[in-house]
Image (cartoon, rainbow, N blue to C red; front, side, top):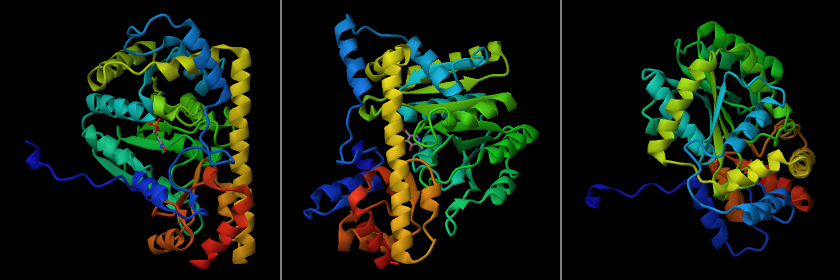
Length: 393
Ligand code: PMP
């Protein structure tokens, strides 16, 4: 049986971690793997999550199955987190999933059932797992122009033009905020234009919302999805709690569906649940229960928001500090885009050979496309890093 297989290629980003760990140089810098890190380089458990876990430990009396859609309190809390406390949830459905990845795959399978001939359009570039997840669901993909490497900005006109090649009923995958890997995001006025195009051409928005709270703020980061919800008849959103609750390994996210009316979204939701049933039967409970406890308790909710806001502001400061250092070291505004970007990543715009040199000569690790993790930057080493970057240009 297994003799028919050849070894799968190693995951580039995870492989980078292996190399980093094996590097004996004390001054090495890990800007590769996409997890939030604090100033000491640790990915800590958030205090609110710790407290919620304690309460869970004290109150949980059984480990029996929760149900196909997971924790209903969690699902309601996530809907409010994304659409606001006073949102009309009558055309919406949510179910808890195994991480944002589980949500992406569930939506992909659901779309395949709903419209087998749909093509899913991805931004060029996009998160490395999008295309493989869609492929696993047998959905064809195509790309639309997105990132202008020279300026570090979104090529908005080209994006709109590119999207016009999509046929009615096609699916457009958009990053709700904090685009990964580029860090370049649409402004709200541009989202308005995208929404108009989606409606005019009968295209279906599929939003990946993996970094809510990491960009302009917890509410602000949802302005695009909230805007879309007022314009488009239907939409699917894959959310993740991995980053904003820092519960990566516990695997919690959600599928959110917006339907034309209450009846149609109920039907779509029932199909989504039969998708997860065959994928993994039921989502893991632990972190979802902790998130639910946080979202339902005013004091804990406020603590979590404050902690998340500290993380966001730290990344913004690092962005600004790094852009300033690069401006000094390069004597140019070439890297100013880093301060304008939002989220955990930006791309420096280096060649793969330059990225290799940073690793070999300085022990600075980033992904081959020069994507770096902003949270991996060190406040007191920005100048040194900028100098190294400029030296390989
Ligand atoms: N979407 C994007 C854009 C991501 O960057 C990630 C994580 N790196 C995910 C989805 C999935 O996150 P998870 O499955 O860990 O919740």
